[in-house]
Length: 97
Length: 213
Image (cartoon, one colour):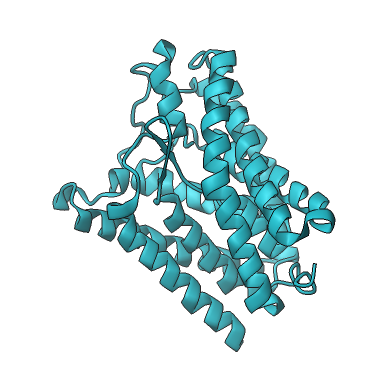
């Protein structure tokens, strides 16, 4: 890896991990734009459900409860998984003829 | 603006999968042909950063919040909207499967809105304006407009689904995301693009030579 690339990866991952650690404490718990809009409309009421049982629902580790640490563990896992999938997948795509 | 399961009937979900698929296929062939071997660690780092920033909701007025989507940022840095499509597809699949953020049945719609529409609108807005506004202004405008237009697309899809009324859905989705677009998408996209263009433009061919602009 070139020096510049290595520097970007280290700095980028450091920022990503810092955000992952701070997000459970700093992120706004308010509903997002889509959820807020949905709250205004009767038509949307009670429609949403979970079609799939995710292991880390809502960015928490179920066995750790809804604590800050639980959020940190979940988001750090997600950040690392995304890095590895992003790297692994682009390598795989490139290596196929 | 991740659409959950249940907001769109399954038949319509299938249509959004079908509409998103050609873009995802094209993004894979973009990666095979155009992405440099040396850019892959950068692509993976951007993906990790965008996953993390999507967990950081910023408050906006009206008791609401929102987060950056990031496809426009990836597209500008890597020089193709397909970079944003591929990156957002990876992030959205991980979010739906591991974190129940965005429905598995709505994945096609979420990829179409955040991966394709937001990224294409934002990238070409940036391209069109960078001569006049410079890279800070153009990437701000691209980030903002990409998010805004994709929020309107979500409102239309949910109106077709019978989940939102059309006019009010457009109004609330437009209003909330116009603000989220300013303080999250536009701001972060322009600050990161400008910083990278100053510090290490050689890593991103698209940015090399843009610093003076």
